[in-house]
Structure formats: structure tokens, C-alpha cells
Length: 551
Image (cartoon, rainbow, N blue to C red; front, side, top):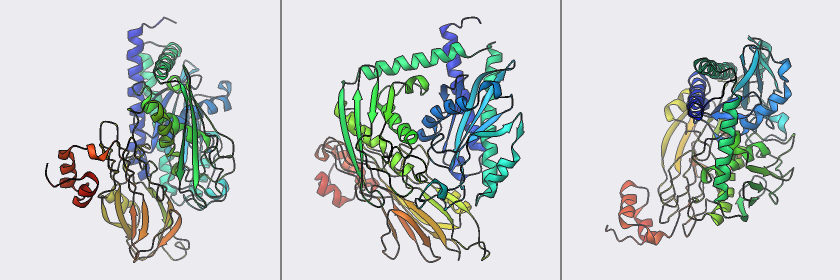
């Protein structure tokens, strides 16, 4: 094999980034489930022949992307190369291999050249419904939560495994959407494979080995250099959270060494009996994402840039749930781990770390109430996603109703009403929900919805930050807590399930982000702008910012 010069290696690296982005767009444009085609709850990537991630699509969520980096290596080890044929495609939704709960399907396809494997393409997306109790926190173990598909062939030698697809359809309230989503995952992998093969043809490559080594080694060295700029030491932080049966604590010890960072969840509360537990792969995915946001954020995400970050936790703690713990709503706590990590990093890099934010998605999984089929009602399952405010940054305000850290865009009103029997009466930003500070926290939002017909609708609730809101940083104030209630004034628990009758309105208020810096130092023109735009009420401006109504 001829040696590739460094300029060509960089061109090829950029080409891989284009390949994976087209992969991701293929998945979004062909998917059936709204959470995929409208909200981007996906990942897509290219891997070398050893299963090492080389490039990932920008579109996607860290919970899918960073778990996929390890999952492909697991599948690579499960199916030896000598047993893999051209046209094979593999699949699993095992939460401890894929992305932390049953609804996320991981698909991997080997890329062949002259009869041998040269790479893999892979992707992950969320299927609407896998049966069981529905996508809520009420399961007592993984078996309550739906269908688990162990690692197996979705396509064998170019022939689709029709029996597997029929099994997935037979165990779902949304069989057509599930079938369509599985074919979309196949299309995503095939798109990446075709484009990768075209690239190798264009550059007359017989192997990606040199490119893979270049990408991984360059990224690893870049991250290690960035780690070396962080003051070495041991930093600790705790987050107090609502939990389900009881309040919880997430604990982190961050050890910064010369060329690596070790994160340990020792001290974190034990698992819940309900489905809010988090497999370690998912907790680690979001924790490392948070570290990468601050340390070497300009370095592309791949196996090399992920390697210097090590995450561990005691088996049985709620961030390292063991089989067969229920994990359906693992994102409720898993997406709070960036705030846990930021609290450690802020001690080392106080001028670079934002305040805490809403962080966990305020998603609303819904399905038909039991007995709907017998009464001629509509059978459906859907998951609507909503977000709160992000924490204020050291030099900028937080972002309102923004998908951080998930990256899963909020569900749109028109789409939501077209896929579920509901009407959304209101969707607006929450005034005064952003924590005050020199930089103001992002605003949460309010959504009012009710069933659109006579049939009741079952809604699964799994929210946090209703009792312990996002904290400010460096003198900033906390954001507003989240809240869920009915229009008659009934305050609902933040976790559980509720059945909405025809005349009942659900009112969902997502949390605001914490502020950064002393509110008294916020410039008067920005306070006036906050009042003029409705982000801050005149009363709050006078009371908190000591605003006198003048610029």
C-alpha cells in the first residue's frame, strides 16, 4: 500500500465527515417516527475495520453517538470477521450495549472491498414503541419495558430478516412506524457504505488503515494536549435531585492527570425500583460529552478523542444500573450528568464553565389508554420532546427552550397534533424562569395540551428539577423549577403516569437555566431589553436587578 501524504489524509478526513453527515440526513429523511424525522434523535458514524469510530455526524445526540462508539466494538467482537458475509447488517437494542433503553436500535454494516472488510458504518435511532407497559418509568424490570433484541442479523447476505421485522411489529402499538424506521436505519448504513466506497475508488485506496491511525492518533494527542492545560487535581461535586420514590444524589470525583481524566461516580445513590435507572454506557456518554464541551471542543469526536476519558461507577448505583433493572427513562437522570461534571470542572476552570441548566428533556411519551382497542378507539404511541433553558455562560446569556445536552429538537405543534389525538392550546416561554445574573439563564417554556377527542390519552411523566432547580454559578441565581399540573389546579407528581380525559388540560412548565455572575452587574441596557422582550417582568427587574425603568 502506498503511503498517503498528510495533505491527502486531511482531505480524506474531511470527506469522512461529509459521508457521515449524509448518512445522518438519510436516516432523518426516511424515518417514520416523529422523534427521528422531526427531532433528530439519531446518530450515524463510520468505523475502521477494528470497530474504532473515525467520524460521527454532527446531527445527533451524545447518548446515541458516544454509546455507539463502544457498541460497534462490542458487535465487532460478537461477530468474527470470518463469519461475516457481504450484505450482512447487524442490529440490537440491548440497553447495556446500544443506547441505554429498549427504544433505541443500533444497526451496524460491514463495508467490503475486494472480498474483505475495510470499514463499518453504523447508526442509532429511536423507535416509537416496543410494547410492554409503554415508554414510562413504571416498569419493575427490563422485561416490563418491551421487546429486547439481542445482537443478530437484520440483513443476511443482502436478504432482510423478515421474521425479525415481523416480531418487532407484533410487539408494538406502532408496527408500521417501526417497520419504516428499521428500513430507514438500513438505508442510513447503506448510504454511508456507498459513499465510503466511492471515496476509496476516487482516491484509489485499498485500505483505510493509515487514515484511521492518523485520525485516532491526531485526535488523541490533541485531547491530551488540551487536558494538560487543565490544572491537575481531584475535584468533587454532588447534585441533589428529585428522584422517584426518594430524593437522590449524583456524586462525581474528577481526577485530572497529565494526559487523562478519570471520572468516578462513587457515592451516587443506589438504583431505583422504577425505570429511571441509567446503564453506565449512557451515563458515560453524556459525562464525556460535557468534558469534551470544555476540553478540546474543536477536536472532532472519534475513538481517539474519547480515549483519554475514563468513566466508572460502583455497580448498582443509579448511574451504573445492572441487568435486569428497569431503564426506560434513563435520560431523566443521564442527561443531568453534564451538570454534575461541570460542577467539578468549574473548580478547575471557573471562567469557562456555564451554570447549570434544565438539562433533562421534558419529554411526553403518550399512548392510548388501556381498553381503547376493545372500544374501537385509536391505538397509538408517540413521544413528544420539550426542553428548558440552558445555564448562562461566562460571557453570554443562556439559551431559552434549547436542547442541551441532548441535541433533540423540541416537537413542533403541528406535527404533534398530526401524529397524536391531542390539541396544543399554548406554547410560550416562561417569563422570569431564567436565573438572574450578570449573564441571565435561558428561559423554560409552558405547554398546555389536552385530548382532541373523546378517547382518554395516557401520558407518562418522568421529569426532574421540580424541587431542586438549576443552580447559578459565580454569584448567579437559580433558574425556576419545572412543574406539571392540570388546568383545575391539581399538581401532578413529576414521575408516574396520568390518564387525561377529554375535558382535562395538562400544563407542563419546563425549568429555566441558572444565572452566571452577580445580577447587580448586569448592564442596564440588557435589563431593559429583557423587560421589553418579556423575558423578565418589570417587577422582577426592579426587585432583582434594581432596575429603575431607565436605560
